[in-house]
Length: 316
Image (cartoon, rainbow, N blue to C red):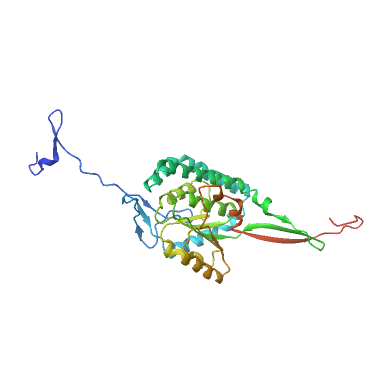
């Protein structure tokens, strides 16, 4: 035996043979990439950060998204608008339901990730179950909300007058930062249920479930570009989320007064709709409503002349 081997690295087994003890294994941290156009690229900036839990344990390598990543995501989302909004509402419903099925099949993984990010097992199970149920809730509304919110309007002329909600287009979203999964699902689902596409900035401190949820989306028949998920710093990216001229609406789910003021000012440049969800409790009934779908809809009104048929005694 090589005399250079230290005695401390040797053990004597029960049968008297000597063996070398294994060195402590280094954990291989997962690199959580971003999700753009149905693909999983790394950030073009090459930057990353390492979120930690309350005990100080490093959780993963997470992409620190840049302005260029956001621009790429907007191009992808814009390219997907016509195809997604043009699908039958029932088909969008099927896809959201499929997302719930795929999330159900990976519950254990999501529970584990939530527990890594300081949730108790009971809280993690509740959050995953609520996220699954929320997808099913909005799947049910896909082909029904237009019936509820459409109208035939009385007019003082010989016309039919109809008002119908239609998707606004590309929506940028800064998701709730306090939880990893439920807030993210709760803001994405009504936006895409209404036929919009979106770019979402996930929680900076609890990003694990966001990228894993992108893996669920990727296996759920959802066309590439409909949902794009970035990770990084809201303070760095918020201005680009609202300033981009090809974004039609922005949703902000935090209560930073400076960012809210900045968004209101910058939105004036292209009359972008800004919606704040800073007081919504996503864990109870107020966290789901068809009115969340309507927050990213435009109401279009159509006039149609009433044809008078001779001898019929009226208009039809």
